[in-house]
Image (tube, rainbow, N blue to C red; front, side):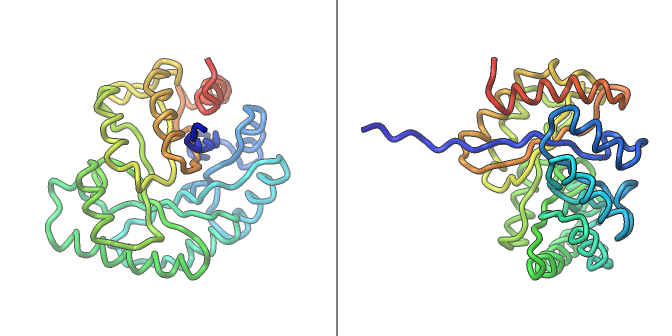
Length: 257
């Protein structure tokens, strides 16, 4: 008898920041038309207070989709009011909040900055856990999660079961380098931001890097942990490009040729 590995399900979604210039209803309409399963609602424009959070939740669910997470711009280390962000997450029905690992790249961050980010993350992770919400670091330049090594160091120091990280291919990496970075942080990855950028942050259709993203999906699927892959940024921010990139994402998440 052959034991087959359990493959993870990959949920195709979108970050509302991708359509930042449009209102909640239009974001939902386009996402539903694209056949996406869920939305990460950003606090930069769309979900800024309890009313808009409740509205986003209702609109998303009415369209048959799920709120995947709340994309906050909270900077760990600031020791700010995280309760209000959790209020938004609760109103939006978001099971997860995205946060940022400080405001300085790891190369320029001293011990004090590291300590502040660690302590504040531990604090907000505890607050979130009490409300059934998880925390995910944005995997991004100019923060402490700007490389696999520093991301792993931060997660080790935070040492909290309620904290994971997103992953995305750092701008300028080859496919091989990007996949290597994913392998390094894979045990801690709780979601993925998906886009197709060139080395100078030029935007291309997702199909231009389909080989990379098919490999990413194979790695995630083989890891056995269900995850969201969320479109983030398309060429010229155009709705039609959301539709075309979503079509590519569907073939990737479903492992279709």
